[in-house]
Image (cartoon, rainbow, N blue to C red; front, side, top):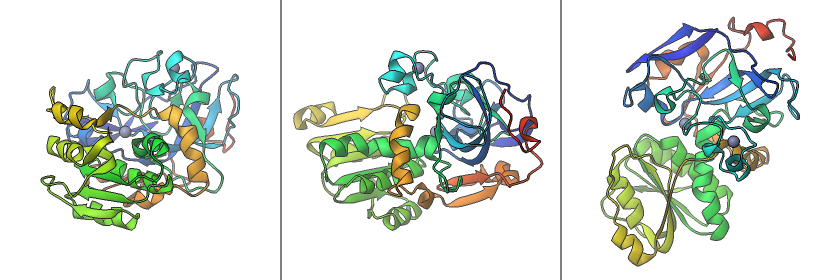
Length: 359
Ligand SMILES: [Zn+2]
Ligand SMILES: [Zn+2]
């Protein structure tokens, strides 16, 4: 089967790789229909992190289930689903506690399409077929009538935007929110805007130095705040830090009200990122940072999408066909979605008859 593969810094091509097979009765094989480029993918492709040779790309997707193990309950062949980008079992203490990113059965960062981070190749969603080792825990059915392209990013970045505000708006209903977007992690920040408005924030301000992202944030209902991350515009009870630059983090912290919350969804690669701990102590600012728990969040987020309260498709800025993926993946765009053309000659063997098979 074909797999979109990063073969070196800035070099991507389709490669022929062995087709995955079911290896247990709780597993599924899925065929990705639409794949979104995660905000972290350009960094992986840039060679920013060393990789163990070529690696599969893509970890945000809407898929079609083409094979199911005998023990899988509640899922059906031919059904469309979103796949947790993190591999997690659904049964261990961490998964049961809603912390599926830290599943006890797998090492940290066991994700699809992120071999440079995980050190392990779990496959990528820009492939003809992907193995899902814990089907019930990792697959969330897509409601009927939804376009896979519109929901392609739900696996990861949409969840990330949601969790950046959801717990904090639950304890401070109707609070004003500031989303600080500093860098290329733009879609997560924009999904955060959507989630904050959907969850009842009275007002959402969006601080960025990027004109295109500011314009899209305004279209989604936020008040744009153009900034170079110097002087703050005001203070907010809930602030989301989304980016890569320490000055952006400091702007976010400086914009947080006394006793307020700053939620970071950022990964700071430097070993030591300076933090104004004295100020945070004095003002009682609570700072949260950590990964999203994809499989745990999916059952919470999908109903908001089904009800039309979250519309992630509005963040998508570019949609290309499967064949265009290698070139499009290297272009700069806020949110890229790659859609498999119907009837393409890349259907996996197991679906060639047009009738999915249960194995
Ligand atoms: Zn991601
Ligand atoms: Zn687990």
